Image 1 (tube, rainbow, N blue to C red):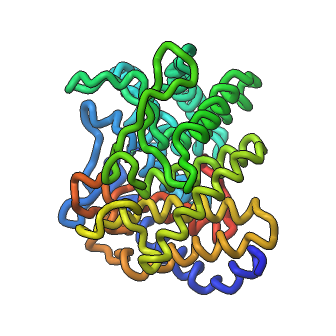
Image 2 (image 1 turned 90 degrees about the horizontal axis):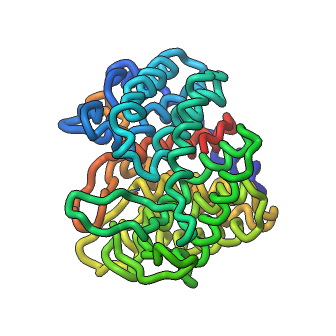
Length: 384
Ligand code: GLY
């Protein structure tokens, strides 16, 4: 079956979920307007609005979610909350520049970048350009990679580390190149994607979360680290989903076929493993059988990537990717979505890392779940 026929077959479910999203989010958009939520406590959104937490990598998702809903509905309640989020985060550019990291793409591209693309707001364009320049400044010219994190308080030397998650930050660089008619940003993004293809993606489609590079010599890998999954050599599902969607996005922005092929290879690994657990994604596909830990955020991110792969694949392949996305979204909606007004979050059962060993709602789960439904509705706005 072709993409459009599959969407049509599922139209009733898609419309129903979209209505539920709008009903719940139009309520929380007002209730949590002055917050930047990360999770909930006793059903109520928490907030990262103070101190160093304002530089938290997840802080663009709440405002970004509001822009997704604004793109789909045109309602002011969403626009006002998104704009509030941007204002709250401006302090990062004055008081916390030394705390900024590679996740400025997650923080501003889907927030200020989205605002500019939807409304033409010039101040937002500048915020996103400043963030893109920050990301580009992290490029190590000798090692040929973008540095991920800063020195931690434990003083671990992470100057040579890259993490697969950064595949989601580099769309900000593709955008900046176009916006400024300056290829330098894109060239660094392409170098990063090529490095990730070579050093992070494994033969079976799983990924290394962290790769340690030589800081002085180009393209020399010193080792890999387990990061947020079970351990070194395991398959942390959110890392897999970052690669899946990230390579699909790099294909969309560059038209380089090698990125689409890589996205498909990673997708196959995600699909084959998620199928085994009735389409509810485990936190790590190569962890011991016990304890059973899931991660809904990985499912939501992967669904977005699978939809984009389906759209860009040959007609004969579209069903494989799109049906998998729908299976994941429908299973998660049935088992893990909370549509009540006593709980501010929607998608439950997110996981931060294997070592924490527990589930919680996390804001980017709601963001990517909504983004996937927006795509299926055909109300397209690609925030990346
Ligand atoms: N970027 C960190 C994470 O996915 O948890």
